[in-house]
Amino acid sequence: MTQISILGCGWLGLPLAKALLKEGFSIKGSTTSAEKLETLENTGIQSFLLALDANTVPEVFADFLAGSKTLIIAIPPKLRGKNKDYTDAQNNSFVKKIENLLPFIQNSTVENVLFISSTAVYGEANDVVDENSLPFPVTESGKQLLEIEELLLANSHFKTTILRFGGLIGEDRNPARFLAGKENVPNPEAPINLIDLEDCIGIILKIIGTNCWNTTLNAVTPFHPSREAYYTQKALEENLIPPTFNHENPSIGKTILSDYLIEKLNYTFTKNPL
Image (cartoon, rainbow, N blue to C red; front, side, top):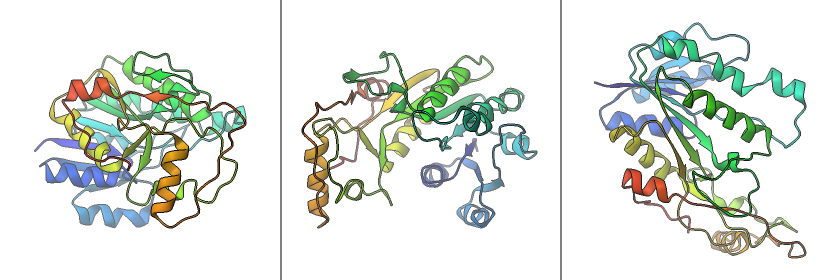
């Protein structure tokens, strides 16, 4: 039975682990919550209490990797803002946390790494964007994600695929509630770039099933109505107060294409954000 280690069994990682178990994989999964260990074990996941630190690597990390062919890194950077304090960013450096893990990954059985990134690496581009577009992140989170992408792709000890998800919806992330009742919302004509959890999992299963490594993929549902049209409709469907939008300033927003992913994986998106 092929074994996969999932670093971060949270909103994406846990349902992904369940889907992989159904496909016949053996799964090791990590969590930062002691209370969640039992939940993982009851699901059939070999669980590890593992919180990353910018200065040290948890002792159990080597055991977490042992025997796995693939490592999926599915933990969010938890950094916010465009001008986050530099010292604070260094102390909580997501880049450093991942960089510390590289020697352990190199010396493990891991052959493939899948890094869950974000379309935030494209910043505030006001254009149509694909994998050939130059990333220009403006948030601390986006900057660190891009740096980690480059670190992983440059490492010749394993094969890496970067998966850049758009805005995540599904389960407890109902798009109707994102902007409901808000006033003076900017960028009414900007396109949406969302992806449902079901497609996130479907794409990852395809990557693993087709051995699609050493590449970078955008993962956004190919459906891009304006923010105003979409969020107004979703609010009305849920009997919520629709947001009001500011039309005084020109709308800024990018359309992120997933054409390369669709072609390379022969993937059909199953969940339309409508």
